[in-house]
Length: 191
Image (cartoon, rainbow, N blue to C red; front, side, top):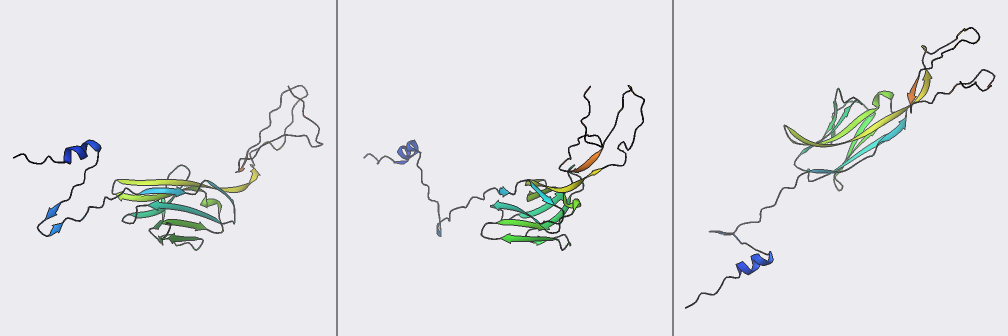
């Protein structure tokens, strides 16, 4: 007598295979795969005035079992400062606050009364292990009024027909544009 042919090879050929595992007590519960955490959104670069307020948002997915941090570094990425861990603010500065929205799994860092020293790179980090983390960053730039440095040329005396070199050093954010004019607004001659 011929045994009925298994339908498994036909199903494998179609790419559909269903496997049920059984134990003495019955069916084995399905194993849920752990998805790798990701940062799905972070605020874009911000430019704010001194004294203003900024909100930096970081949304994460599949990170409920992991630690999420906000960390600030300077623009040269030195001297990192941990600002928060999970939904708790670590920094004891009343200008800073943190909101965690469970429904969108987003962490919003708010800074009030912005100061020049708040400028830098803010990283949202999800710590996966001692040696592994994922992060996204947003740069906060703070507007500063232009200032002409004292080492700029204040006065200059030259003989007629001789070249003159004047220097102007200015700082601020955004970087100021420097233009020259005579005291009476007359156009300077070109060489």
